Image (cartoon, rainbow, N blue to C red):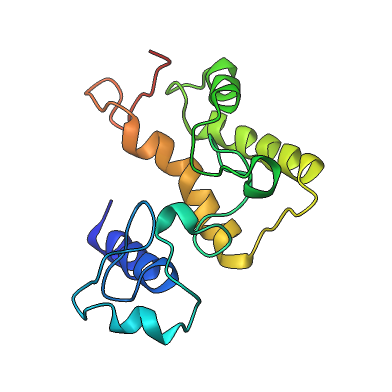
Length: 155
Protein backbone atom coordinates (compact mmCIF):
# COMPACT_ATOMS: atom_id res chain seq x y z
CA UNK A 1 0.00 0.00 0.00
CA UNK A 2 1.35 3.38 -0.92
CA UNK A 3 1.98 6.15 1.58
CA UNK A 4 -0.80 8.25 0.07
CA UNK A 5 -3.48 5.55 0.50
CA UNK A 6 -2.27 4.39 3.90
CA UNK A 7 -2.11 7.98 5.12
CA UNK A 8 -5.61 8.73 3.88
CA UNK A 9 -7.07 5.55 5.43
CA UNK A 10 -5.33 6.22 8.75
CA UNK A 11 -6.63 9.77 8.98
CA UNK A 12 -10.11 8.74 7.82
CA UNK A 13 -10.28 5.93 10.40
CA UNK A 14 -9.09 8.22 13.20
CA UNK A 15 -11.66 10.88 12.30
CA UNK A 16 -14.58 8.49 11.75
CA UNK A 17 -13.96 5.99 14.55
CA UNK A 18 -11.31 7.39 16.83
CA UNK A 19 -10.79 10.59 18.72
CA UNK A 20 -8.99 12.28 15.80
CA UNK A 21 -5.57 11.75 17.40
CA UNK A 22 -5.91 7.99 17.91
CA UNK A 23 -7.90 4.98 16.79
CA UNK A 24 -8.40 1.48 18.13
CA UNK A 25 -9.02 -1.77 16.31
CA UNK A 26 -11.24 -3.14 19.09
CA UNK A 27 -13.40 -0.83 21.16
CA UNK A 28 -13.03 2.81 22.08
CA UNK A 29 -9.48 4.17 21.82
CA UNK A 30 -7.60 4.89 25.01
CA UNK A 31 -6.71 8.52 25.57
CA UNK A 32 -4.75 9.55 22.51
CA UNK A 33 -2.17 12.21 21.91
CA UNK A 34 -4.62 14.89 22.96
CA UNK A 35 -5.65 13.04 26.12
CA UNK A 36 -9.05 12.06 24.73
CA UNK A 37 -10.12 15.72 24.48
CA UNK A 38 -11.26 15.33 20.90
CA UNK A 39 -13.45 12.33 21.75
CA UNK A 40 -15.34 14.42 24.28
CA UNK A 41 -16.35 16.86 21.53
CA UNK A 42 -18.62 14.18 20.06
CA UNK A 43 -18.66 15.51 16.51
CA UNK A 44 -19.32 12.03 15.11
CA UNK A 45 -20.58 10.35 18.26
CA UNK A 46 -18.59 8.35 20.76
CA UNK A 47 -15.46 6.77 19.24
CA UNK A 48 -15.91 3.01 18.98
CA UNK A 49 -12.79 1.83 17.18
CA UNK A 50 -12.79 -0.11 13.93
CA UNK A 51 -14.88 -2.97 15.35
CA UNK A 52 -17.67 -0.48 15.96
CA UNK A 53 -17.27 1.35 12.68
CA UNK A 54 -20.22 -0.04 10.77
CA UNK A 55 -21.59 2.50 8.25
CA UNK A 56 -18.84 4.98 9.14
CA UNK A 57 -15.85 3.14 7.77
CA UNK A 58 -17.05 -0.40 7.23
CA UNK A 59 -20.23 -1.24 5.37
CA UNK A 60 -22.49 -4.12 4.42
CA UNK A 61 -21.51 -6.83 1.91
CA UNK A 62 -18.05 -7.52 3.31
CA UNK A 63 -16.07 -10.28 1.59
CA UNK A 64 -15.72 -12.45 4.70
CA UNK A 65 -17.77 -10.77 7.44
CA UNK A 66 -21.51 -10.83 8.17
CA UNK A 67 -23.72 -7.77 8.00
CA UNK A 68 -24.18 -5.97 11.33
CA UNK A 69 -27.97 -6.01 11.20
CA UNK A 70 -28.23 -9.67 10.16
CA UNK A 71 -26.05 -11.33 12.79
CA UNK A 72 -25.09 -8.50 15.13
CA UNK A 73 -21.44 -9.44 14.58
CA UNK A 74 -19.71 -7.66 11.69
CA UNK A 75 -16.23 -8.41 13.05
CA UNK A 76 -15.92 -12.21 13.13
CA UNK A 77 -15.04 -14.20 10.02
CA UNK A 78 -18.08 -15.82 8.41
CA UNK A 79 -16.57 -19.14 7.35
CA UNK A 80 -19.29 -19.91 4.79
CA UNK A 81 -18.60 -16.61 2.98
CA UNK A 82 -14.88 -17.38 2.95
CA UNK A 83 -15.65 -20.87 1.61
CA UNK A 84 -17.79 -19.33 -1.17
CA UNK A 85 -14.82 -17.25 -2.26
CA UNK A 86 -12.42 -20.18 -2.18
CA UNK A 87 -14.89 -22.38 -4.11
CA UNK A 88 -14.99 -19.99 -7.07
CA UNK A 89 -13.13 -21.06 -10.23
CA UNK A 90 -9.62 -19.66 -10.27
CA UNK A 91 -8.62 -16.87 -12.61
CA UNK A 92 -5.32 -16.62 -14.49
CA UNK A 93 -3.63 -15.46 -11.26
CA UNK A 94 -5.62 -17.65 -8.85
CA UNK A 95 -8.07 -15.71 -6.70
CA UNK A 96 -7.40 -12.56 -8.68
CA UNK A 97 -9.52 -9.59 -9.69
CA UNK A 98 -11.36 -11.69 -12.30
CA UNK A 99 -12.62 -13.78 -9.36
CA UNK A 100 -12.92 -11.02 -6.76
CA UNK A 101 -15.17 -8.77 -8.87
CA UNK A 102 -17.93 -11.37 -9.53
CA UNK A 103 -17.67 -12.47 -5.88
CA UNK A 104 -18.24 -8.86 -4.78
CA UNK A 105 -21.30 -8.59 -7.03
CA UNK A 106 -22.75 -11.79 -5.53
CA UNK A 107 -21.98 -10.71 -1.95
CA UNK A 108 -23.75 -7.41 -2.57
CA UNK A 109 -26.81 -9.23 -4.00
CA UNK A 110 -26.83 -11.61 -1.00
CA UNK A 111 -26.54 -8.74 1.42
CA UNK A 112 -29.38 -6.79 -0.20
CA UNK A 113 -31.58 -9.92 -0.22
CA UNK A 114 -30.98 -10.86 3.43
CA UNK A 115 -30.42 -7.54 5.17
CA UNK A 116 -33.51 -5.37 5.54
CA UNK A 117 -31.28 -2.54 6.75
CA UNK A 118 -28.73 -2.83 3.92
CA UNK A 119 -26.74 0.38 3.58
CA UNK A 120 -24.34 1.37 0.83
CA UNK A 121 -23.08 4.91 1.34
CA UNK A 122 -21.19 6.57 -1.50
CA UNK A 123 -17.77 6.54 0.16
CA UNK A 124 -18.19 3.40 2.25
CA UNK A 125 -19.54 1.28 -0.60
CA UNK A 126 -17.76 2.62 -3.65
CA UNK A 127 -14.34 3.19 -2.11
CA UNK A 128 -13.94 1.34 1.18
CA UNK A 129 -15.96 -1.78 0.31
CA UNK A 130 -14.24 -2.03 -3.07
CA UNK A 131 -10.90 -1.77 -1.33
CA UNK A 132 -11.77 -4.58 1.09
CA UNK A 133 -12.28 -6.92 -1.85
CA UNK A 134 -9.39 -5.75 -4.00
CA UNK A 135 -6.93 -5.68 -1.10
CA UNK A 136 -7.52 -9.41 -0.65
CA UNK A 137 -5.73 -10.13 -3.90
CA UNK A 138 -3.36 -7.18 -3.95
CA UNK A 139 -2.02 -7.72 -0.42
CA UNK A 140 -2.01 -11.50 -0.14
CA UNK A 141 -0.85 -12.63 -3.58
CA UNK A 142 2.65 -14.05 -3.89
CA UNK A 143 4.77 -12.26 -6.49
CA UNK A 144 7.37 -14.08 -8.56
CA UNK A 145 9.08 -13.86 -11.94
CA UNK A 146 6.33 -16.11 -13.30
CA UNK A 147 3.55 -14.01 -11.71
CA UNK A 148 4.81 -10.42 -11.42
CA UNK A 149 1.22 -9.21 -10.75
CA UNK A 150 0.93 -11.86 -8.05
CA UNK A 151 -0.75 -15.23 -7.62
CA UNK A 152 -3.18 -15.98 -4.80
CA UNK A 153 -3.87 -19.70 -4.54
CA UNK A 154 -6.31 -21.59 -2.37
CA UNK A 155 -3.72 -23.09 -0.04
